[in-house]
Amino acid sequence: MITLYGWGPMFDCPSPSNYVMKSDIQLQMLGLDFDRAIADLDSVSKHKAPYVTDGDLLVQDSNFIRAHFEQKLGRSLASGLSDEDSVTSWALERMAEDHLATIMAMERWLKDGNFFKGPALFFSDVPDEARENIMQEVRDGIAASQFARGMGRHSEAERMHLAAWDLQAIAIQLAGQDYLFGDTPTVADASVSAVLISCATEYFDTPLTGLVRGHTNLVGYMDRMKDRYFAKNRWPVREMA
Ligand SMILES: N[C@@H](CCC(=O)N[C@@H](CS)C(=O)NCC(=O)O)C(=O)O
Image (tube, rainbow, N blue to C red; front, side, top):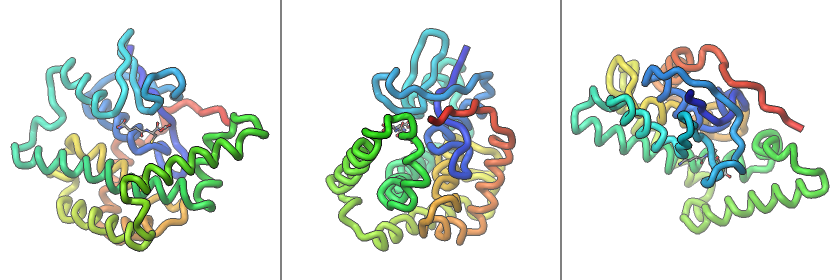
């Protein structure tokens, strides 16, 4: 039995996590029959979701989840792509997850208005007396790691320039096609569409929403991916204290 651990709809997105959306889409692309369950980050060594259990085997990280099932099924989600497109596909995934999603996460976690209506909900089961300090520690940790990496040294306007260049690249690759590499979804569609959906949600107050929605082809693309993979919520309800 296969179980994908993560979280279901929040913040007007199919999941609060683009990585959980990505794995959910990729397991569906592979035609796997799987259950979905709420993640318990303390139960796994990397303390991150998504993770899956496949029988007794635990696989952590969306990239290794993909690799595990591709190997098991003997089929690659990039199999229809030329070598050149495979290179572009991987570069788009890395840009979306390791660059654009970082900017999105900073908008959610570091702006007070967004944080308190969004990620703060993840701390609802922390005892009242400890909650404020723990939330501040986590937010300080995120700010410090982004400062160290360099992203936190940019102004918000500069970060939005960087995001706009990423979005432009994705919009150019998509052009008038249904999916990034033609009329069939392939591996990068899972990763890239999940990040776009996370950036475009109107739940948060961020210029990212308008930057994504300014590309009409990206709007159609997100709708197409949501209709195809998230028409129905299959996640259990997450108990919030
Ligand atoms: N590289 C990982 C990233 C996963 C990730 O960052 N997950 C976040 C949710 S979006 C998480 O679990 N964060 C909890 C934490 O860092 O404590 C993947 O591709 O699965």
